Image (tube, rainbow, N blue to C red; front, side):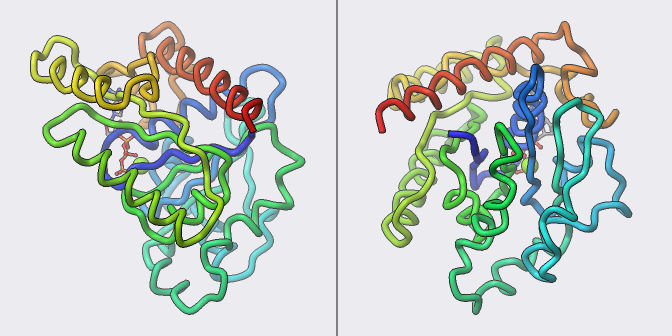
Length: 259
Ligand code: ATP
Ligand code: MG
């Protein structure tokens, strides 16, 4: 297992923060890592300090203009971590791709030639179950779902996972569900405690032990074009994403052994 999608149709739950910092952590050591920004908002690309005027060539140009994917790969300031940007064009992907035969396989075909070059590839998905998220689910070996424990969070996850199941029925093989990640957790709040209790009770050990707490450093780092490991290496956010990385790699390995 080497490809991982970060998925939730709900917006603002920490998908991009998770994709960016996981990728940075994966890249420590000898691993070669690629993060692909599938969101028209380009938040992951901005998080690495890319300017709005520099977003192209992006993964959008690969899908819609037949630009070879190798030509869209760029280095980031993190050693061993490459990036393919997202751009505005992606907002119309559902319409543009609606008549394309095998539209759910476009990312898989594109990424195939890069698989040997990277130890891990991470997909940051848009906040919808759009064709781009479906492409990520078809391409990735596994996916994780960041969840912010707020009102109706549990209902949101139930709906999302059943929608993913439906997608699977229509398509066949898709990414394996690796787990739920609790993000932006504020343990001082009783309401949060209760929600976390409900989510952990319902999803048992599919919920990662690691929780990402509310952290100003995690919120600030993208503004400096840095991952948490460069911006605040000693912060709680940095420690949490390191713990999460260990848990994720462990689960990826175990899923591999089962199959
Ligand atoms: P979207 O659905 O719009 O793509 P997202 O799910 O990718 O959003 P993020 O962009 O990662 O979510 O996070 C939403 C906002 O919350 C951002 O401003 C981000 O900096 C902030 N944020 C993310 N995680 C944390 C955290 N643990 N503590 C504090 N702020 C956070
Ligand atoms: Mg995002």
